[in-house]
Image (cartoon, rainbow, N blue to C red):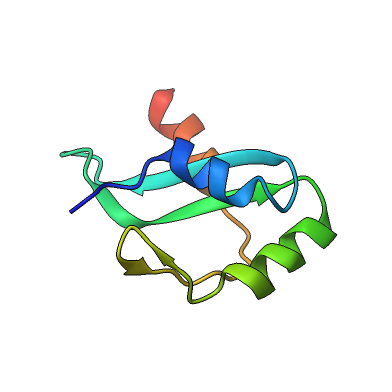
Length: 82
């Protein structure tokens, strides 16, 4: 099974606008993907287009769910690193 990387997701979602952040959430012990990510785009219009065009699309043999979220991942990274 192919593993989807941040770079893969940035390429895929960049067709809707500039990707400002792309974070695959990983197990903090093993580093393995937990099979979800947070992607931020530069405009509300780009986010809406990605939502409508990418929800339920297959990427690397997995059907993805696209939704809107308020990610706190960046806060967790700051806490974890210090």
